[in-house]
Length: 212
Image (cartoon, rainbow, N blue to C red):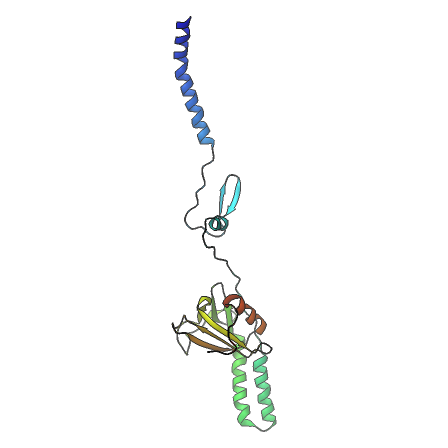
């Protein structure tokens, strides 16, 4: 009897081993693969695993990576108050028979009137850029200091807006054009409130009441 049981167990053992191995293999292959995240992914991509969607930005944030926040492009609306005031001053000078004052006021008023319809301040995610026309064409090189009319917010040292109640001039100093700093002045031919708000948001609050 013992001999028969020994023979039976010897015959069954290999089959049991094969059955255990087959079951283990099937169990291993049925388990979900581990999700590994590496490299760069588009912001709209998702890692799909374990029956849920996980945004890449969340995974990067949890991994301790810096995630850049995308900001909306802002273009302040045109403001015709300055050219209208200048042209009004020219008309008043003509009425007062002061032609010498009327001519420069009229010329400056016409120039700013044309520029108001053409020049756009474009605040994108990382820089302020001067563009031309409704098509936002790239402007020519800066006639005073050379180079492209595009300056990163990170290079702004200071900026000012004169005067908040009736903005006439915007000033800013940046270190992108030259390390010691380059000063820029622009007439405010845009909506002053919109210009001020976006400058505070992108370049931080102004630091001085007058430029250094």
